[in-house]
Each structure stands twice: as structure tokens, then as C-alpha cells.
Image (cartoon, rainbow, N blue to C red; front, side, top):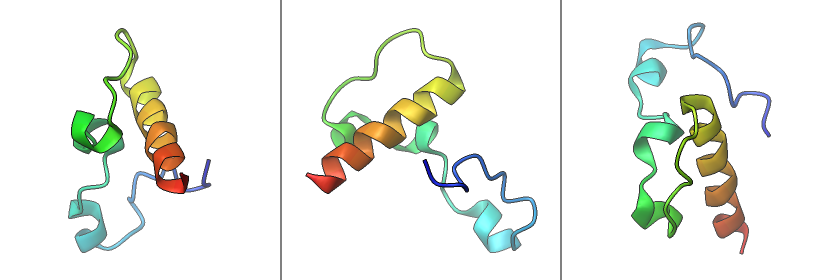
Length: 59
């Protein structure tokens, strides 16, 4: 996981804070090519989506 995965962007410019960088909210089934498991917390879902997206990206 990158060190900035949990960055809240509070120390960044307003442009960066407004950018769509919320994995749990913005990656969908089309991006991931699979439905996320049920019952995950917001944090778990963000982590799961990040890992799935990166696995697919590397392949």
C-alpha cells in the first residue's frame, strides 16, 4: 500500500481536495470487473477496491 493511501489531503491545495480520489465511492463494477464482497466497512471496501484495481492494472 502506498504511504498516501489514507491521506485526507488536508495539507494539499483546494484543487487536490476537490478531485475525485475516493476509491470506495468512485470505482464501480465496470472498473473492477467483479462485485465487491458484501458486508465490508467503508475502509475495508476502499482497500479491497484498491487491491483489485491494482491487480487488474498490473495484469
